Amino acid sequence: MKKQSSYILSIPAPCHESSDKMILAEQGLFCKSCQKTVTDFSDMSDKEIISFLNTNRGNICGSFRKGQLNREISISAGRRPRPLISIAGIVASLTIAIPAVQAQSNAQEIQAIPEISDSVPVLQLPVTITRITGIVNDIDGYPLVGASIRLDTLRTGAATDTSGRFELEIPAVYTEATIRLVISYVGFYTQEVFLSRTDTRHLTDEPTLCITMEPTVMGGIERAPLWYRIRYKIKRLFI
Image 1 (cartoon, rainbow, N blue to C red):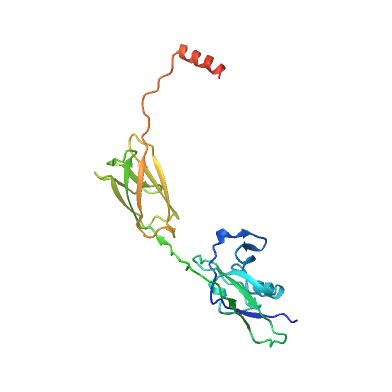
Image 2 (cartoon, helix red, strand yellow; image 1 turned 60 degrees about the vertical axis):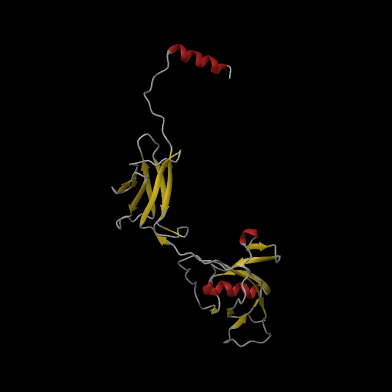
């Protein structure tokens, strides 16, 4: 049978089975629900996808990028660039039906077996942090007045007010990918907080932090007397 040089992949009803419930297999993940291996096509070029489909006939489950669906893929097409944001893989069960005689110039359409879906993938776009607000307390929950909050590489910072709150603007000249905050207060351990400038976990460009400072043990250092040091060493012999 002559191998095809082009396909059109169409998935009318995507399957949203969680990948966490699948087992790692040689060519992808094994779905215990449908007892099939889910092949990862998301990083394949058009040529690699066509080669796989020509080699593996019958029902195929796969994970695709949106840009790989509902368009003609052909051997002449090169690797398509990956999208700038992560897109959840679309898993579907494909049935490939190849007629005995086919025209070279006609792309063959592949229809998917409908799957029941009860969830819709949600995309979160990253935001850039421009300002940070927060409150600094001690371990008992009391606000620390005058605590210092500063950026590690710049002489830019803020201090807490009478309620322990602060507001820190991130300068435009601060180009680090990760924000490193240094929080200090007399009599307490200095803390460091790291924030990614662009992170899908942040739903706002002005995150609010709650920082709890742990007090230090301060005092003059005094060397133990000779008799105490000798007794300590003798006790250690019997431990």
